[in-house]
Image (spheres, rainbow, N blue to C red):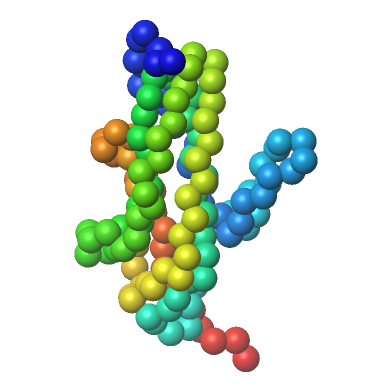
Length: 135
C-alpha cells in the first residue's frame, strides 16, 4: 500500500568499507572503513568495496543509485537502481551496494555519489594514491 503523502527522506549516512556483515541480532558490522586506496603501480584493480547508505525521515516510494566517478568525470562503475519504501517518518532503510573488481586506471580523486530518484544527494572523495613499495 502506497503512503498517501510523499516526503523525501534524509540520507542519514553513507559509508565506504571493505565488507558488510549482518549479525544474528540484526545489527550491521561495517569492516575496514576507508577513503583512500593506495597502490604501488597503476592501473590497479580493487577486488571489492561496499557502500552502505541509510535513509530516514521520509515517506513514500523511492529509487536509490550509487556510483563511483573517475577523476575525468565519467562513471567508473555503478549499481542498479534499488527501489525502497518508507511507510512512515519513523522508518529507516539501509541499502548496501557491492562493487567488484574495480579498475582504477590512474591515481587521483574519484568520487562516490548517491542519488535518490535521479537527484544527487551526496558526493564524497575516494582517493587513489601511488605509494612507495615496502622494503
